[in-house]
Length: 282
Image 1 (spheres, one colour):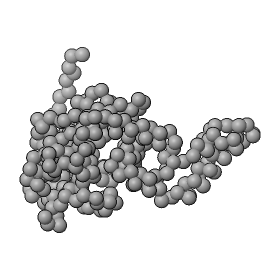
Image 2 (tube, helix red, strand yellow):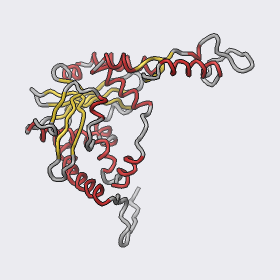
Image 3 (cartoon, one colour):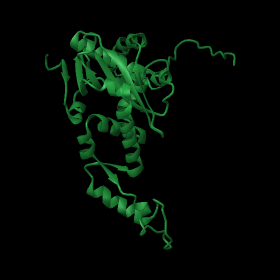
Image 4 (tube, helix red, strand yellow):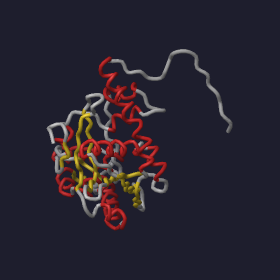
């Protein structure tokens, strides 16, 4: 393998983030029919902050694939709001997080743990329950029985000269499949989840990366964990035909992205000619 073409195991996430290149998370912002190149430019200019659900998803990944990283990188904040010393301004006992006492304790805790991500006890309990249910789920456990976690991949895209990069949750070279682990609030309709979250495009992108780096076709597996009680788990194969449809979008998206980079113009909706709106039947 060259310096450009690589499949790397055990690469720290911080080092992976330093890899220059195009991620699927950026490309899918521009996916038609709802996305445009203007959406991609806006994401480049205004990166999104991690939401609570994104943080929980990241912790589930750490707990499943690298428990040591979870212990080193995160800390649980005590429930200061339940302390007997937590009182309102007029001296009444309180369980509020808006009191001066709570804010002071939380600020002090944050200063002591400034190099770690802070989560509250409820989030920690939920994450432990999700990981526990993952371990108990026979099909998911089978997917993770052999292979390697958090595999970083990069490869050049010949048609555009862009570098494509991705980090695959789980990769089994021997049986040629890869697994994506997702937390979701939609556990009963994996088909809708795949489409609504654009995970079908993400999996097609990963499949393409593996084809370009190995010359072999890999197949996708999806493991879902409900992010609400009772934290159900589901797991299954993703149809190759579904990913084929998304794969057809990869090259046109990359070509458009390359043109925008070169021209500095990031078009949104078409504003030429005439346009007719029609209303369908209800």
